[in-house]
Image (cartoon, rainbow, N blue to C red; front, side, top):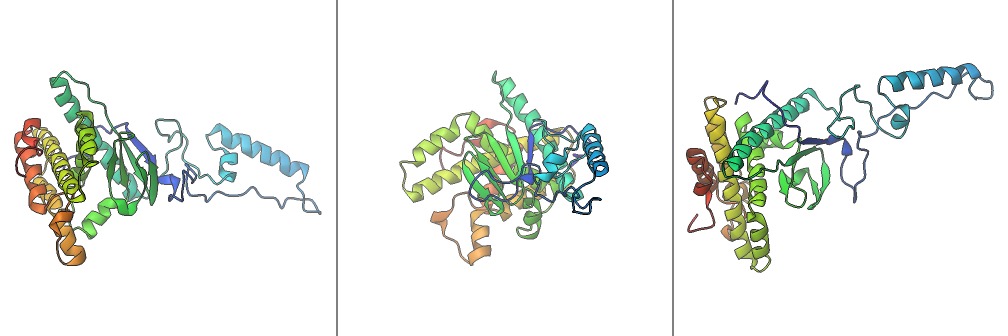
Amino acid sequence: MEWKGRRQSGNVEDARGSGPVRGGMGGNPFGRGGGFRIPTGGGGRGGGMSIGTIVLLVVVYFGLKMVGIDLLQVMEGGSVSPPGYEQSDGSPAPQGTAAEEETKAFVSTVLAETEDTWNGIFQASGETYEEPKLVLFRDGINSACGTASSATGPFYCPGDHKIYLDMSFFDEMSRKFEASGDFAAAYVVAHEVGHHVQNLLGILPKVNEQRQRMSEAQSNRMSVRTELQADCFAGIWGKYTAQKGLLEQGDLEEALNAATQIGDDTLQKRSQGYVVPESFNHGTSAQRSEWFKRGFDSGKLASCDTFTGDI
């Protein structure tokens, strides 16, 4: 997928520095600690600081303050970000490895491409598309839908209209699920955006209300239909991306392979050696790849009605 050098979305929230969830909104939003202490072993024989040392520290403090580094923040356990490296709310954005920073740039670009697609589709229908936020995190996160860990996987929360993505997931896709490639990763983001589209269209509220009155088996079947529609919506995005000339040879196959590798039957066979169809809640490998392809081939919402007839 040709993504480098393209517009990046301003709707990405970087929560990598918040640390793992421990029963609340704990953790320092600026990092995992690692601050440095102010030296106290100055020049006095009794272990105190001399006037010269105090003056020096004051000069150092205000000097650093002028270039955007607050030593008081550091003393409280914060980390230092380069001056001017801020998020949309004005807070310092945490930095990770070079690989993480490239992943962030990639996700921001894919999110921007989904914004272009769905803004256009909604405008054509006389509607306004509300762009979702995407939250990047490490280890754990709190959302309006509750707490989640890395094991949860990417998810969309209707309560706050945000998509949550652990930075390690794409690496796990490649290693554990044998679904590598940038368009495979883009499919995952587009799928979660698909849930946001469902929410805006009023589909998710109706589904969730109906599932409250269903048996577990019925609820699972309704969940499968919901997930397959999100796959189809991701396929619609894929078609518009292809029309821009951004897809490279093998990209479509990457997405279809990813859909196949995260099908309920494939995941259950991998983890326990057998499948339990009544427990499926996302769809089989064949279903997931088929509905993504339907959206990709048609580019139309009408082709993504998974709630009528057989799936």
